[in-house]
Length: 330
Image (cartoon, rainbow, N blue to C red; front, side, top):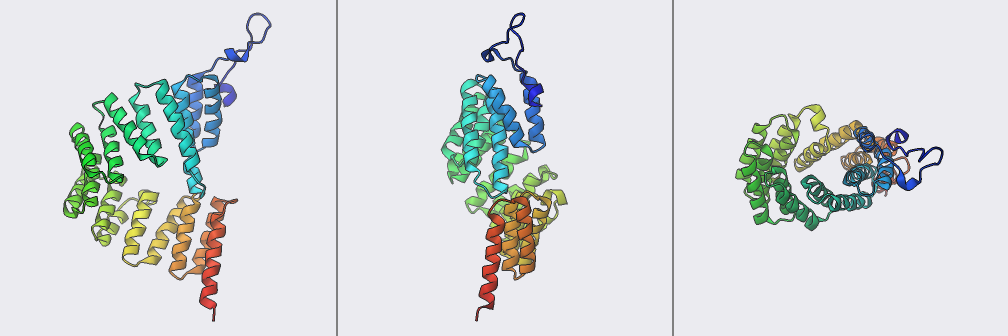
C-alpha cells in the first residue's frame, strides 16, 4: 500500500531520473492508507506510511497529525501489553504541536493536542490547548467540556464549573456537559445533586454507555455500590465488556466484598480483549485474592498470549507461587 500511496515521479525530461528533492506525493491516497491501518488496529503499519509521508511533505499539518494519531494508537497497544505508553504519547504530543505550528488556526488540531497532553500527563499544556481551541471556535461545546474536565482532574473546581457551564450553555441538549457536572458535584461531596444530574444525562441518551458508566461511578462514590452494579449490569454485553465499565463494575463489587464476582468481571473482559495483558493480570490477582489459584493460573496463560515476550505473565506466576508457599509454610 505504501508504494501505491507515495509516488516519486520517475523522470525529469527525456531520460534523466528526477532528484529525490522533487518527489511528488499522493497525499489523499497516503492519508486513506493510514486511516485504513488505524481502523484495522495496525498502528505500526500506519506509522510507516505516515513517517514516509512526513519525510516527503515536511510542511504538511495533515502528515504531522497522522503521525500523532498512529503514535497514540501504538501507545494504547503498549499499555495493553504492560509496556510504558508514555514515550509514544509524548512523541504524539510533539507531532500535534508541530501540526499546530503549521496550521495555527485549526481548532481541531489544538483540541487533539490537548487530548494528547492529557494522555501524556501534561495537564497545564492540555488546559492551554483547550483554551486556544475554544478561542478559535467560540461555538464549540467540546472544547469547553474538555477544558472543564481537565480542571476537574486538577480539582480546580471554580474553573471547572465555569467551563462546564459554558459547555452546557452552548449545547443545552447534549448529555455530556450534564454528566460532567454530575462528576463535579460528586467530587465536591454533593452526592444527591450529582446522582440527579447523572441520571438525567442517562435519560437524555439511554444508549450511550459512557453516561451509564459515569452514573455507576457517581453512585459508587456516594456509597451506593449495589445501585451502581444494577446500572452497569443493565448495559448490553458488548458495552459492559469495555474497560471503563469493567473497572467500575469491579470496584463496586469489591466495595461489597464480592471478590469472586470482581475477578470474574475482569476475567470476562480479558477473554473479550485477548491483547490486554493487564486485564488478565488483574483478573489473576483477584482470583488469587479470592483463594482460587487454579483460575489465577489460567490468567497467567491469558497474559502470556497477550504479551509473549513481556513480564506481566511472569510477575503473576511469581505472585501465585509466593502465595502458595506462604499458605503451605509451617
